[in-house]
Image (cartoon, rainbow, N blue to C red):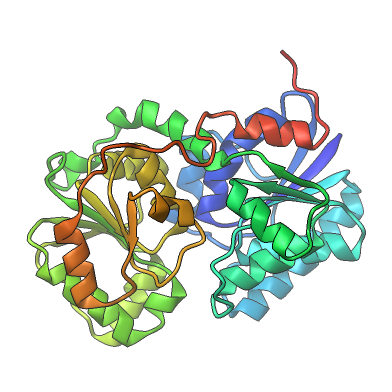
Length: 354
């Protein structure tokens, strides 16, 4: 069986690592990198650290507006699909690469398998929400990480081809956590385990709104512990444009590779983030999380007590950090057994050896 896999952004590289291993045990995978994330710290380092095969096709479609970026991806992916005539197109998550892959495949009648199907924030102002809804409605195989995702799809009338398989990101995290002690990230930044907070800020709703970004930065300044802040290129640019200086306790650095980030998260006292993936990883690693968004598609992390939503409100952020405690129990969310990639491969009709 032949598959074309489309990836282009940092979270997709992480998810693709265990999937590539599972798929290539017996079948042919053609890996297409759209170039949505293209510099070394956001792309190449993940291929090296996670052992992802070199892309068969690199579209170089990064940069530009959402429309410009998606249009370049559409053209390139369509050419690959017409040339390769795969049995499946595999897409991940909710990025412009996901949307472009789904649209291109639907137009040339290649069946689509969507990993992380069924997630909903119910906020259509988020580009990611639009991307995931469109991808789900075009997909033939919907690979859901949770029962909530399955129910979301059913509410939209999608019941065929739906499978609850768990979260492939947990597969990648288990592998990285086993190797994370080799990371020197704490020593490089003069940090001690449980003696700092980890923050990540990158979503457009925060970086593109100067008032929200200023409130988040002010809240970081109100906290009394060192804060490690790997700066996404979009965030660095937004801080400069808004004339915002980071508080003295914030130790800004370049984006971290996956092993460094897992080590930094595992040993943090708490995480502040607007990332979807980090909310789950914090929960899996037993680290309380304060999410700098007004809603989340990963609602189970909130329900089990390991995550709290605070938006970009300065006082709520500070209060949540000061009140944070580790719950008595850690709930096993989204599978978390390291077998999601194998279940996904089975759903694709693949027979894995052994």
